[in-house]
Image (cartoon, rainbow, N blue to C red; front, side, top):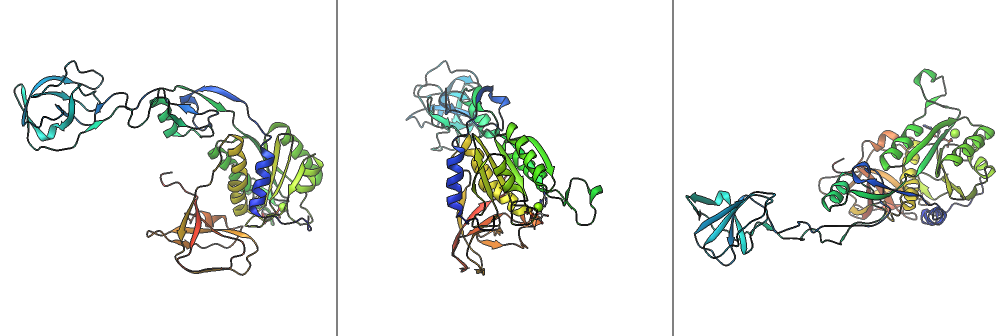
Length: 402
Ligand code: AMP
Ligand code: MG
């Protein structure tokens, strides 16, 4: 492994994209309500105009177009869910509730708060130009694509489909993932924490990331630093999953058996060194519609490599193109580093005035650093110094409302 060529991140992405193009998932028809977390397998087209009719945005009085008279005869009251029976002519109005269709001939709806009712008439107290009407089809047109293939269904997508009259969707089956945490030092219970041992945080981290991202974890195991055990775990995992995620054992240590075991399991090795910090020993192999990611052992690298590589692959398998939302923001202070060989992702916080401040970070084992940050900023390879004010790419790791 020592002599493996280090490739750029963009080259590594291109290889992953090429190799996972051979992985395809079956799809199934599901009731929309049962499909949260799934990814749609075909574009979804609205069955309805939204709003489906010209509707009142307020409780008030519909008055005729071109008639700004101070007083109108009230013809009828239209509750939401009913239809008007009268057409408005000059001097007439209809009381309408929020969400009710407005009568033909309506120019605007005057808010009830701006009127006074006097027997069968309504008087306008404070004239306003606001129409207070939501026009038929102004939000969505019947036949319009409202969600495109590759969209993952969250609460908003579910509600948008239902509002457009769609109750069943074709979705991909979830991507199946096996997780294998390697290392003689890792234990799954504090009771087993003998000297030299550490808790296995990568297994639970990867499993929780998969769950959050809609990937189905079919197996989550640990394996000692032994070639035969690693090989057997990889074989078992390949038989039941689309993607196999290993952590640890991919570097140049005496007990790093993962790349050798991957090759022995019949996988074609594509790369084992990527010019990214953290994450250099990132290893990728594939064969016959399956892919295996040898993630580094250190937890921050595991997190980043999952987001950059595994999620990229999983999203592309289900038809989505871009899964990372980059924004460009100015640095709040000067940044310097010694070596510029690799592209670097560094924890940072966003200040209230929209600048980026690096946060405390001790390196790739410092998982806690990811809790105290808003996201990661990117230092391109070849760059050692960035002055305050220079714009850098920023990836949020927390949704604003999550
Ligand atoms: P390795 O790549 O196997 O040499 O591991 C690199 C570093 O990551 C070592 O300090 C390991 O102890 C640590 N590490 C490996 N696997 C895990 C794990 N599952 N959970 C937490 N730390 C780990
Ligand atoms: Mg190890």
